[in-house]
Image: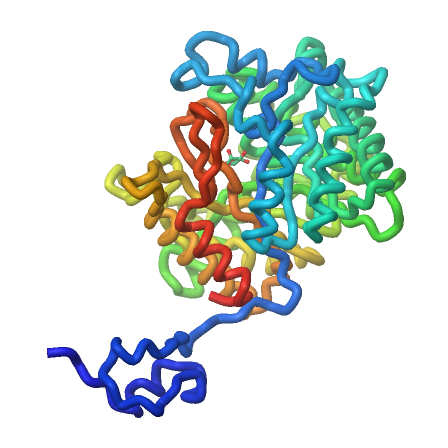
Length: 485
Ligand code: FCB
């Protein structure tokens, strides 16, 4: 027998009993009353909901309009580096299909789009003569965004270093930091004139250095010694600092500058004050070479001590540049790193996740939505940034169209709902998070995993490049529309 809901019971479920017509005495669910959960958690007015992509992962058109070669072209075309032998030669063909993709964003209701500029489109040789046709593509695309009222958030360096610069040592060469700044200054002047007011210098210095220069999983596929690695890290953060200065020098007043970094997302393993404090210390120490030196202007004593003779060489003047004030701190957050207090010198212990720990399709992407709460809170507590953006959050899940052609990606829905709910808690507790960009709009070229790990809220059929919104697209659309979860 169906349960009959009393008026009192039903009113407990709704935001104000007025939301439901009480005229009918029919049983639930036949009455089809509109039930809004009474614990709806709002985001601040004007919260920036967006989606994110990066150039090499979506654009394709690698030989068009004078584009030069990047380290990812070289790497992807090296046998055995990418699953299934995939490359970004075509990827999502976003270069030619951006009009349709921006239409999808408009339907989704996003207010912002974070994308990256392919450095080798603009400076095919990394520096020297610019290729105006390269930037023309982004100008056309930005115009299309603006037509739909979508605000462009530009990342300058999302891993596709011009090969010509790698041939001169890449991030092991101090000069690369200056070339990045030169490129950043040029792009911010040109795109500033086109109305862009938000720039991120780099995407995940931690990733492109450790995966590309230490583990060799990503381009350029190196396995550097600890000493050379520490020096490359130093030049990369120097490149960020120089770029902040170059953007400020070349862009219009009111331009906001920052970076998108993926700090190890320290998450206290219990809610005890000791573990919370340990997570705070871990956040600072585990990210010493990246966010910490950028936001504090110094390497922590422990970082330098642990490296000993392998510590990077640096000057005070460089630290000052690295510490150039930023307006935006972008955090790419996927999964937690659990931390507890320890009586050892380090004061914290990072807990290894067992093989049985649940993860999304990508093995590295463990499920712990509370990192969306703790990371912004700890970053705010440590460094008091003016504004935090979640510049990436999302997950892989291998869903295909069902018989009726729908893509019912329930796992992604679960992941996003939980992460966004935890983020809302962080904001309610005072973290100055101003926006959130889901990774990613489209299934795309997922670096060494090729096309085998799908992160999109829009499905891409890689046989014909047709797009189809997944169920998570509708979920995200409804969250944006209500500005609440
Ligand atoms: C991040 C990268 C992004 C994408 C996601 C899944 O580390 O910034 O390009 O690959 O992971």
